[in-house]
Image 1 (cartoon, rainbow, N blue to C red):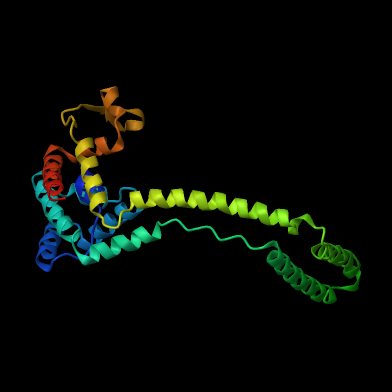
Image 2 (image 1 turned 90 degrees about the horizontal axis):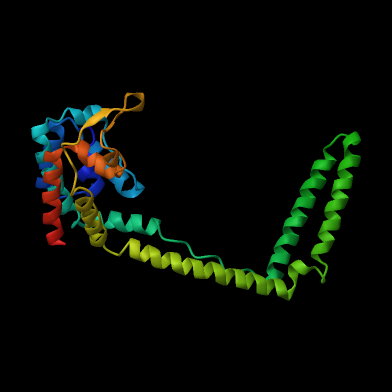
Length: 272
């Protein structure tokens, strides 16, 4: 029963922001009654939402919740989630998260003439630094470093070579083509981002609810568990053992919890 909150509170709603005062007090009271600090619950809820993985309080904490109390906890959190999903605070947090996932456009290519000037300036700085270092070295080490310095100066001459292919008009064209490829990829990623993160969270919430209802629709709560490798409990039916982690979490949550979560999810979907 250790992951019952995962089924609905964290995995499905995955939200935890400022709600109406009376509702917040109600949920906070429910959480404290079962040994979970509201701040801790909200922390795990946000981690689940933003991180793409399930974060939930310790198993020891969750096990303290009596079986008969779990449906009530789910209903209370569902009420909080629905209220908060409509609040300005939730929308602000969602938009901030959405913006943080937005793809970055590629930088336009610099003209090779500009690149040449920047490389020349950098080469001059490197030469000055090396000359200063050589001046501070013992005499027996300077001869070897003078050879390095001469090689660097020779390399610098190539930057002024008008025949250097690195700074040819053809290189400008190659850079432009590379930029166009990057720009095309960026536009594709931006279109995917806009679909995945719409301007309002409703589409995403609806998707979460539908996924939960789908994965929890055929959980066999009477399935038998047997000791497996290393003493870990596994399903006696190999087909069940191949089911998704979310399906197994619903099983561990228990029938009472999942049924309450499904009812709340269905009600919320009607509103959306």
